Length: 151
Ligand SMILES: [Zn+2]
Image (cartoon, rainbow, N blue to C red; front, side):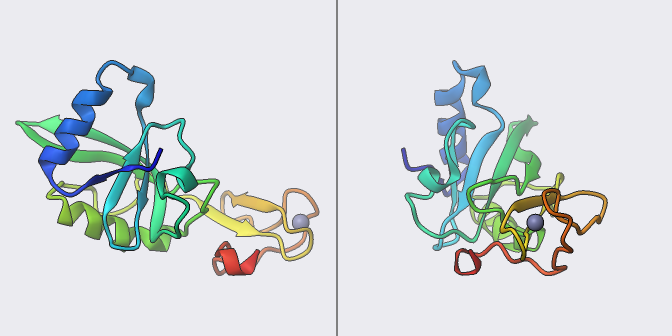
């Protein structure tokens, strides 16, 4: 099912109330659609489904917390095996959260670096700045190369 568009704190509160029964729903799957809006799905949802099959500005996982009656973002990562967005896509996320009136940390709290191997095409999650393919040991590019056109 396509993700719910969150354009205000009320939208978020309504969404969270509906998820209340299902504690396994968090962290939520999110995408930022091409109009710059946040869309949420349960964590078991594929990002591509959350986005209605469309390209996105960013994607990942997100958790929320309430402080003094105000909802804010507690944590956010760019973890999405469907889109493998770059940590540099944060401004799209921050912009969508600003637009929805939600406080946020100003960055991905759990940034992930994805690279496609130029030799064997394997998708790699780069850890500790070790830019080598886990499968074939080829050197990985330093710039993001996960866009659909690069596949
Ligand atoms: Zn490789």
